[in-house]
Image (cartoon, rainbow, N blue to C red; front, side, top):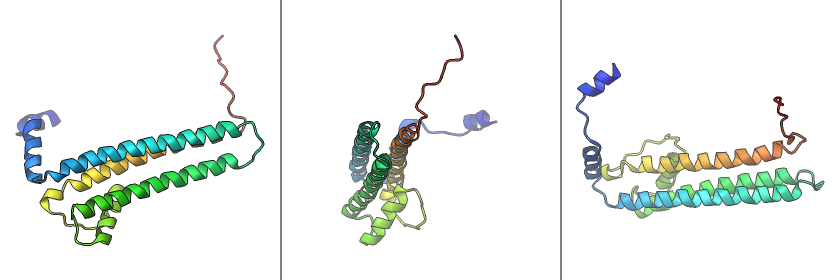
Length: 175
């Protein structure tokens, strides 16, 4: 059924679709914003790796010491640093949108950046035609940044949970 629908539809080639979208945007600034988005994701990834690396280094240093709660405190600090990085990225997106004059007011621009980054989509924003792809770019970076952060926090939590005598190697039932 789906195959017959797709074969009956007059689907454009990828090149045609891309050319039409590019012409519809009519905005060369969008490519600079795409490059900034890639740069922001790279910086976020490196920052999360550094935070997770520092946590695991501290965790290993405290592993054999009897400093109770220090591991959890370092995990809490890691969470705060990761949340701060996300807030910084929302603010960066707001500045990018202010510089591009996407909205007339700064608060509206900040709310837009925050809603798109977190993919909440609560507000009703009327974008000009050449900025219609901007929410997709911002939400794409937010989704991937949150995924990277979640994966890092998951490994950190795993290190904490395996500390309480659960870090024994599983026995192999096969001889």
